[in-house]
Amino acid sequence: MNTGFRQLARAVALCAIANAAVAAPMYFEVPSGSHPHDVAATPGGGPVYYTAQMTGKLGILDPATRKVEEVDLGSRSAPHGVIVGPDGGAWVTDGGQNAIVRVDPETRAVKKWPLPQGSGYANLNTLTFDKKGRVWFTGQSGIYGRVDPATNDVKVWQAPRGRGPYGITTTPSGEVYYASLAGNHIARIDVDTGEATVIEPPTKDQGARRVWSDSKGRIWVSYWNTGHVGMYDTATKSWKEWKLPGNAHTYSVWVDPADKVWLTDWSTNAVVKFDPATEKFESFPSDKSQANVRQMLGRNGEAWGAESGVDRLVMVPAR
Image 1 (spheres, helix red, strand yellow):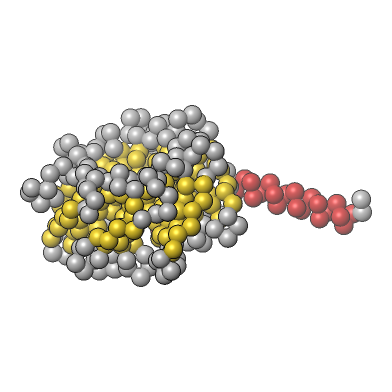
Image 2 (cartoon, helix red, strand yellow):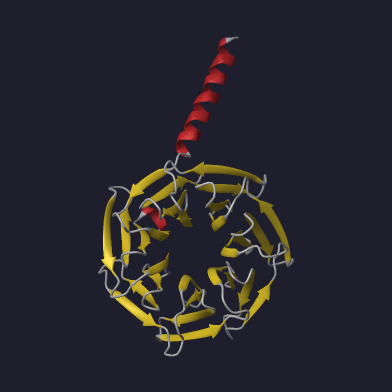
């Protein structure tokens, strides 16, 4: 083997090792008993929020120092979803308080928008902002709704097929879609009228759980019952579906800024990356059994998940 070839081979090997190291998951402990459910990373490398569902708190992790701060959300709180709003605040769906909650990023002040009287227990799940600064949310009891922070107006609609609304997302053009876990469909919400239109995936009884939009406005869907990831092209109104390896139960989906698709697989205890260009999956199993990683969300270069079973957050570098 000549010197040039050996140097090239060594460079390739070092590159492969570096890439493998870059892709290695990192784990961040949170207080015992928190059972973090959802996670949201602030843009630009700042703090990472998580919902401590069992203790009624919003957690705030500084990834650089690994320091964790928790904010009490109030009596009977049981937070589920969390996102970072366009105002920089942490916005939470609080099933225990039947309210939408905001935590100020600077003062940690907690503000609540209870659902209207007569709404009943909503089993609130996830939320998203539209292009007009209003936050839309879902409830598995069979509702979806909207909060206008500018006027404090809260509206609730009955879902067209009853129980099931769970994940929700906004496309780059401002359209809002949700997934119905019990209803086995996704739906598009008219953000002006509030009316929801059901869209059926090709696979029946798939258990559409979470949704996320890519940069082209295509809607990616995690199928809990059948272990697929589905993609609805809003331009052509057509579907494509891919089965995850093994006996999968696909819990969540998030699409990163490079349009790579990140999923969580309950059965294999792993974070899974899907590349739509190559149609290949890459798995990152947890190093602890029964990690029960639930929702995923992230930011440029980082895919974050919540390991509810072992009181940790996980971050996989998004190469």
